[in-house]
Length: 167
Image 1 (cartoon, rainbow, N blue to C red):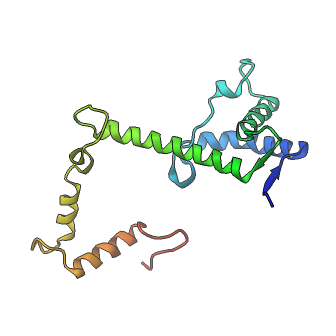
Image 2 (cartoon, rainbow, N blue to C red):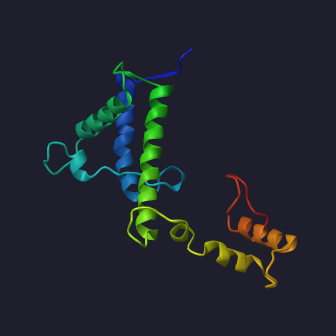
Image 3 (cartoon, rainbow, N blue to C red):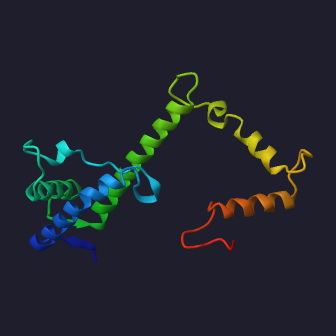
């Protein structure tokens, strides 16, 4: 059985109402997409389709309908799991490309548009090793490793959602 989401006229009104309420939230949380990723916020000009200096519910509804139509790739008026998955994959791909472009522009010291191992690493492994080697003997003992992992978990790294540190 194919999973689908049917958007009727009543549902479209509900979606539009949520979209209207989301405008201030989008403005407030710009840049805080799912999993901390970048979320594109529509500009005022994009929402003010008739350029009269104000955004009406009709314009917000039109924006919601346009977004729906973009995802409804076969134009049948319903969004399937496949269509929603494709839309999410595309957003994820675009977000990844933006992050990678920022990383390259930040680390690309020779300006060739790509990252060498030196540009990517930048001595990070050596600095990390020095921090972990607490007794400066040139090696990381199991105890030093465990202390580092506990410290890392205490900062919220390496934990799964919903887990809390003991301290």
